[in-house]
Image 1 (cartoon, rainbow, N blue to C red):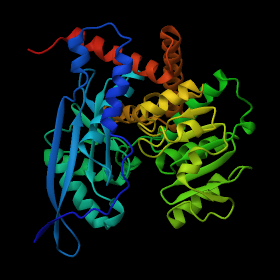
Image 2 (image 1 turned 60 degrees about the horizontal axis):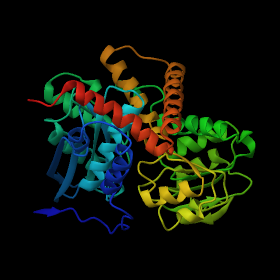
Image 3 (image 1 turned 60 degrees about the vertical axis):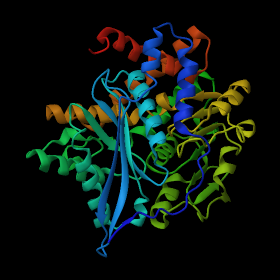
Length: 427
């Protein structure tokens, strides 16, 4: 018997992410002087792929799952973007994330367009064998779209280097030879890059330090940091900031949060979360909710969880002086307006969390050349690109007298629009 996958109940999304992405685009596009036809063209995804596929559970029952892959743009090169396994996955979320990937890649100067994909599933409800069967079947459905020269997936929420390994192997078995460059974020022993797992979080802290310097906020041991989300991005950001001497006063994940005004031992907390499945119950701090973390007493807030976490209901109560977006789309347009009016400095997602795709680009290049770098070279090149991108965005903000989010989108959209104009419309 074939049954539909029964998803557990999930929290209601605060705001449609694709409408947020379009609203951000419209705000930025108003400042740009290029043809209305190109402005309209860049609003739409180039391709949208929906698949419904069966997966056999360990008990022999077959269940149906739904997956997506959206290409927003391939104007600057092959599309690039993660695959997430989450109950929150839907077509509008994937459309938004693909659009943000286009702007992110363009902003940091990578030869990619934007893509995103996902499967509607809670991966924690699957055994390892079930997760592998789901991944391989989903990968086989994506074969018409993905390749090292057309679309290169990567890990995202709910997916891991092992998931990327299964996708790479499925693709390689289909074409008959090994193709490491078809995905990034793989384990090192099959063509992954040094520094990839930590890249997004490390990039967030590189950008945070540039912003702190501009705001004359120093020294590090006086800057209190709060991190919402303790997955791959949040944990890497917290660990790196902690190693640089910043007191991390609050951290949260899906289980709740922990606060310590004197600073948390992030390494101990990370080990505790790995052992217990979450930060809740960590003994060296007070329990707080995710919402309380957002408005807690801190100097820097790093939202590194889901979309729409900073919104019109809590933006007026945020006490941080600097917000650095580790997640994609964590701030709604209404919240942006409130934060701007309050003079809170915000570094947007497409700049702040671009470290992941930057090092994914390094991995792709290394795979294509079969020539690999050491971790010092990876970090050196990552820092160079992130700092250069930050100051390019600051320059645009000053030139147009706009906030950093609008400036980042202005820079990125202009680069993509210029490429469209040069290439022209086919036929």
